[in-house]
Amino acid sequence: MRLLTYNFLQCPKTKTFPLILEPTLVETIETEYNKEFILRMIPRLDWNLVRQVSRQFAFGELPQVAPKEGTQDEETLRLLHKMLLETHIKEGVLKSQDGTCYPIKDGIPNMLITQLKDE
Amino acid sequence: MHRYLVIFRDIHVEFSVPELLSVYSLVARRLNNSSAKPNLQKDSFGETIRLVSCDVETGSKKNRNIFYFASFESDHEAFLVGSRCVLVRAIIRLWSYARSHELCLKELQNLRKESFKELFLSEKDSFRCRLFSYGRRYSQGETVDRINFYSSILQQFPGKINLQNFKHEIWIVEDSFPKTGHTNEPCRTDIPSQVFVGRLVAEGCIKQVQKYTLKKRNFIGTTSMDAELAFVMANFALADDWKLILDPFVGTASILISCAAFGAQTLGSDLSFTVLKGKSEGKNILSNFRQYNLQLPLDIVRCDILHNPWRHESVMSNHMKCCGWLDAIVADLPYGVRESSREFVGEKLHSKFVLNHIPKTSRVGLDNLVSSLFDFATFSLVGGGRLVFWLPCTNEFSEYDKTNIWHPSFISIAACRQILASRFHRILFVFERKQWENDRSHDEDMSSAFLHQAPFYKDFAAKLFREEKRAEDALFRKGQWRRIE
View 1 (cartoon, helix red, strand yellow):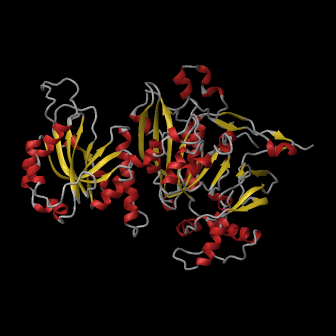
View 2 (tube, one colour):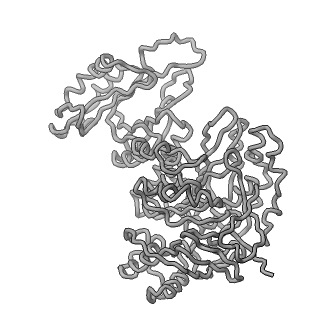
View 3 (cartoon, chains in turn orange, blue):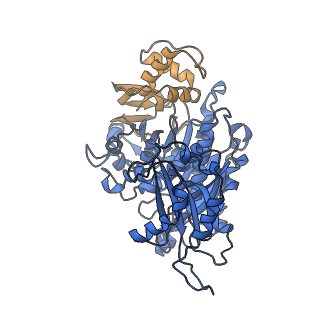
């Protein structure tokens, strides 16, 4: 799962957003830098979550407000590309606020609701 | 504005005009970047395109017609549109048009030289002439005779004739399709009913599409979409560079491959783990993308659209409202013939089984899938985004049923029927999301609007196989299907 997709996922059970990401295996796969796509995606992202992810994965601090169209801030865009499109979560868990777990296996998040009975 | 002749391929006839209109709106948006939000209703191109036979009062109705007149701004625009349509055979800049070769030649001789100015430009520009006959096949000699008939025109051009490497191609188009039905006219097969002469501007993209044929694809399943139709769907979805397109029933990703071939970024999701995992290491969804050197899908997610895991606009904090994040949704719903419509059933598990558990699924009504697809599309598509999906129907389907499906937040663009078997048809529905600011209806829950209409696709498998036990009435009905607390 790429971190871009993480920004689009909510908990299907409680309808809460964002989920809490707990990765156990992270991989970086280089892809072609696509400035237009990043620019197109920025207004569709929850910027608070992007900043939080950037802190979580030690990409450094991002500006308070999302870059606007026609920005000259190439550095931020490159950073966003590296973070959102090149970082893959191979294994890990997405956690909802009520504790429901959605495992990520082989990079495929399983968003089906599993209820636990541990008594 | 110039007059062009559009020749469609003689296949999927119902899809051809809507596909052309879709591609036109995409190209028009690309050409005038200044107007960020073009209005589809103002589109005048749709009014200019019309069937050729309306011009000639032939008296007898033909069962097929592949010739259409259309007006484009320029050759460049016609080229951009024509070269992206799967169902277009060619677009030619029309010089003359008449009922017979003799009249056509006379009209050509009366034309001023400006009409052929591209061919008079330089001696270096080579050209060739070609006879395209619809409904007849000519031998080499007959073809040459017909081309020689126009020699008085062709000899004026300074360029050299070159059959292999040519810059311009002149098409002599003959419509000789046999008249059908009962007419008093004597049947003359030797004279065509219409003749067109013009310069070729664009050819359709069928040659590029043939590369993607399912016969040579690495990983396919029972319901993989035929490559041509997948490209038609991608055109309806306005797939283009930098767009984000999602298929919620991805299967073997046959539709996403066509979208990715047009440069779009793709996302896929499915309920079935077997297709997401693939047959083996080198036979899965990703290997299909690698086979054609396409951009890999951004992600594959396992989910059930009835329990939607994609971000809903209402969950976001107020100052972060985004007005959608997807450019298009393409879907081929599982409608219970080859693949049954299924939903995920919640069950309680011990935590140590969670990671490797294959959850239980149960059958679900197709109308539930359709209404949740609309729900999902309403909240995730950007204004102007497209929703493209198939629904099955039997031969009792009527024009009225096309209006049966509607949604207050969407404009209906097209509904085209493909006949699969005598009683089994399917329809491709295309909807466009209204701009968010003009749309207040997303505040209410509209999902119930569809369920009470007893739509034509309900109980489809039971109707098709005439088996009562396939009826969806036996399933949990509305109100019960959201039974996971």
